[in-house]
Structures are given as C-alpha cells and as structure tokens.
Length: 476
Image (cartoon, rainbow, N blue to C red; front, top):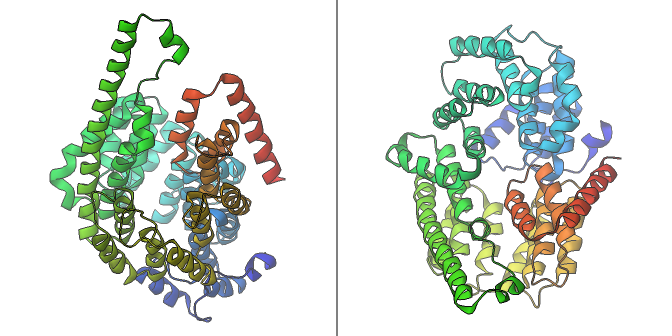
C-alpha cells in the first residue's frame, strides 16, 4: 500500500487540494490532473479519496490493477465505502480478465453488507449483478429490481438490469426489447444490445438506430455519442472487409472454366460494391449522431469527430478539424495537443508536418500525458518521420503492454497482422488480439474475426497456447 501511494503521479496538480476541490476540478474537466492530490489524501486513510482515486486510475488501461487495490481498500470488507464495490464492478464489466481474477473477491464481498438495507446498498448489489449475474438467482434478482424500482427516482437502470436477467435466462427476444428501452437511459446498454443481436448485429443495430433519429435531442448525450461510435465502427474498413465474401484461391479458380471464373469474380465484386455503398451510408448515419453530441458540447464526441475527420481527409478540411480541436482545448488542453499530432500527419492536408507532430509528442511526454508514448509508437509505425520502423514501434508498445495497457496489445496485434509489415506474423497478431480482448479492448474483436478467416486451425491453436502462457507470465 505504501509503495502504491508513493508512486509518482502523472501531471500532479497543486498539492493539498481538498476532496471537495478535487471533485469540482473533475466536474469541470474529467481529465484534470488530480492524481497526486488524491494520493496524498488516500495516504491519510480517507476512504472516499481512495474510492475517487480508484475511479481516476480505472480510466487508464495501464493502471486498472492499481485501481482494483484502491477499490478494495475503500470497500474495507463492507465497513467502508459500499459504493466502491459498485464502481469496481463496473470496471470488471469492462475488463474480462479482471472480472475472472476478482470473482472470488466479489462472491465474498456480497456477504459483507446488507444488500437491501438502503438505496446505496441495493444499487451496489445490482451493479455487482451486471458484472457477475451467475452469483444471483433469478428470483433474488427480480426482488432486487422490484425494490430498486420503488426507490429510484431519476437516471434509473431498471431496464438494463431486466435485460441482463432476460439474457441470463436465455430469453433473447425479451432481452433485446429491454436493451432497446435501456438505451434511452444507460450507455452500457448500447454495447450489450449490439452483442445480443447475434450474427446479423450490424444491419439490425443500424436499423434500430435509424428509428431513434427523430428522438436524438431527448437521448442522453453520452448515449448519442456511443451509438455514433458504434455506427462508425460498423462502417470502418476492417468491419467492411469482414462482410466481403471469402475469395477462392488462385488454384481453385484455375480449375474452373474461364467463363465460370469471370462469373465468380463479377459476383464477388458486386457484393463488395454493395457492402461499400452500405458502409458509406452508415458513415453518414454515424456523423448525424456524432454531430448531435458535438453540438451539445460533449467533449468525447468532439474527440471522436476529430478522429473521424482525420480518417476521411477527402471529405473534411484541415481548417474545420483545427477549429474543433481548438474547442476541445478550451477544457482539455493536453487532449487537444494530442489531437494536433494527428492533424500534422494527414498527408493530403496543408497542415502536414511530421516534425511538428514529433515536437508535440515530446511536449506531451514531458507533461506526463498518459497516451504520449503510444503516440510516439504510432508515429514510428506509420513512418511519419521516415520509413515505417515497426521494431521501434513494437518496443514502445511492449513497454506499455507490460504495464497492462489493452491499447498497446491491440497496437501490437495490428502491426503483426499487417501484410505490408516486414514483421508480419499472424500467430503473434492473434495472440496479442486475444489478450487485448481479455483486457477489454472491443476493437480487437474484429481483428480476431479477420485473422480467423485466413488462419489455419493449427496456427490458431498455437496462438491460444501462446496467449495462455503470456497471461500466466504476466500474473506470476
């Protein structure tokens, strides 16, 4: 505990702020540098400060394990902050690996407090249910939800809890209905709804999103943003490629008569054209949702919109992108500086200046910005300064992965999966993508699907063995 508290804080603010001042700073800017002050308060044994420190650490993929320690300290075996258990459960729900590791702790923790004593305890119990539904009988869950219905007045998650219960019972149609209702109040319902839609999840999700457009302004802005990013993900290049038909090998084509070869090729191209047209429409739909959230001042949506613009430079301008980054900078200056890096790396824009991008990254590293090293790795990987240097990029990603960063594992998987990279290795790509999923990086799911389409079964089995060994080594 003492070692953790003595750890150097990234970008610590002026030491000595009170917990109330820290809460206000986070209210104004969720990325405010408050870690150092929170550590000082936590060192004094203040459980509320330990809880808030855990919440701050939990936003960094490389610090989730330390966050778990502070959540447990704050909970104090049921004698401290009961709601810290609810916050920790939300982290478990986002991180399958941590969920598995802390299963025994949560099973025991449920016995450490009276689950229905008050609204706080009741809500904590149901949040644990979200992460660990197997710990609750259907009857007990239903009773908890009914009590919650009677006690909750605003921002209630009853529909989400009912959706998870229905899914747990195998009532998939009911679960879908409840998730659709929950998407009006709880952002977590968006990903769960998408997952429960099954093999046709992309068209079904897009179709449901269309039915909500008329009510956009009445949907909480965080949910509007999440639906927009999900639509953007569906329309992304990797997702589109998964909907292409698997092309026959050259040897298989050569065995066919010439006329049949041409027919097959034409049919494949027609399917590709249809898929690409649908993807273009979906990107337009995603933009409707993102723009709504941007207009409502939601900074995370502004960040997503900047990424959207830099990834489609022919459809957007450098000046509009720079203006949006300036808006972000009004409340989150370091985040804005990080986004300017991408502005200086778009090859078709007049803002192209990789050396300026490098200088910004160095400033971010000096300021202890959380993702600065990742940006440096990306710069090397994409060859901004010279030819791509995947080995330099990988060394940075490996360093960050050692700290538990799911993003770093995903980046390594992407490097190894690229056929253009001199270090192409599908087995390593699959291994790291699986670890990224274990750590809660949803982007890695499509990469896994893409790899499975072209990898022989023996290579996948080899990758799974490597993944198991890697995870075992990490946790020893």
